[in-house]
Amino acid sequence: MARILIVEDNPMNMELATLLVEKAGHSVIQAKDAQSGLHKSRTELPDLILMDVQLPGMSGLEAAVLLKASPETKSIPIIALTALAMSGDEELCLAAGCDDYISKPLRYKVLWAAVEKHVIQPQSLNRITDMNNRPRKILIVDDEHLNRELLKVMLEYEGYLIKTVNSGEEALKSVEQDPPDLILLDIMMPGLNGNRVAGRLKHNPETMFIPIIMVTSIDDHSAKLTALKVGADDFLTKPVDRAEIILRVRNMLRLKDYNDLLSGYNNKLEVQVKERTVKLENAYKETIMTMVSAAEFKDEETGAHVRRIAHYSYLLGRLLGLSKKMNKALFYASPMHDIGKIGISDAILFKKTPFTPQERETMNTHSAIGAKILQKGDSPFIKMGAEIALNHHERWDGTGYPNGLSGEDIPLSARIMALCDVYDALRSKRSYKPAFSHEKSVKIIIEGDGRTMPEHFDPRVLAAFSAHPENFEKVYEKYKDDR
Image (cartoon, rainbow, N blue to C red; front, side):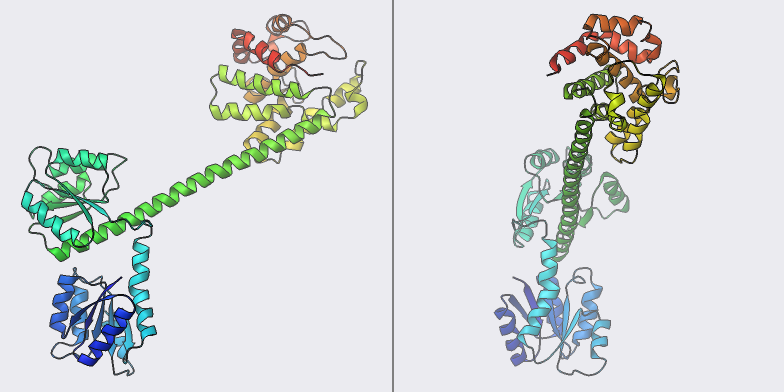
């Protein structure tokens, strides 16, 4: 319900306007001339003013100019009422500061639309983050009992919930226990003064956005600068004017609404981004596992091998002190290391006898094929998968393929994968060899056997493996082949 001031000298017009406003569900304040209208505007602070243009003495337009020039009343919407709908009247009304213009006789629908436009919609916007319509809580902090009670009476009349405390220490306790929507804080208090209280509140992430209006009896520029430096949002000078404090409180709460609304949007957006990131990651994981499953049909390796490789890589990454992000990418990217075997013919892939030089050359192309399959992926997992697929057969000493890279020219992910792949190959049965024990596999990697040599591996990766080989055995035992 809005409070509407009607300024009208004609009794019949006043009666009609009052009837229409009350029919729309709003309360009426009446003034019979411009001077009375100015006075009631300042003392009553209505939500809207319906101002007759033709008033005795001071005209309605002259009154509008004065109202818009006053800080106390400039934000109150004014609708001009006139019986003389002549060309140029609307321009005159707007030039005087009126927000709208209605011709007499008043009609209910026209008046209702104007109130909706200038009062209801703006009020709804101001309350947008306060959907439960709870009364706003204001904390008054002042060591003088009379000052506290005076401010309390003024603001309780406007519908605010008021709590008062008499010291800075009590104020901090109160804010911690029950955060208010706004604080009226006296500067000059014994003990913890207003500036120190404001400074603590503004440096606390939990309370830094609570508006603080400093109340002081000292109208001093340097005092205001000091308060601003500690985070004060506004000032009131004692003795406090009722109209001024109501307007300043309204403005501060409106700013808090906007800030809370923005914060709510940011939090909601952050949650949505996280949810979409998780969904996208899950989609990439499904894509990866689908590709890996397809590759299994073209390889003698099993799903257990893929799981072991993922855990070996993650384990080595942790031993090397890599970031959680890097380790996560390793876990999901490493199973794609042999995806390129999809492009190798069955005759070569499943051959039981040793490869001819030409067949070995063809077999070695699986790394480049895998990289080509994955190269257009935009997921960090798939990008790393392409990196691993291309380079996991490169060797630290430069004797690997496909490009003969050496040392740190080989991506770290591929250097990690190279050792993991060799360990699992040694532990697994092949057409040309039996499965080796953990102890024998570790000895071959660390000491070499002619085919596999320690210089094939990054020394840091090899050292990490050598320090905790038992962890790799645990992974192997946990994910043994099921065939």
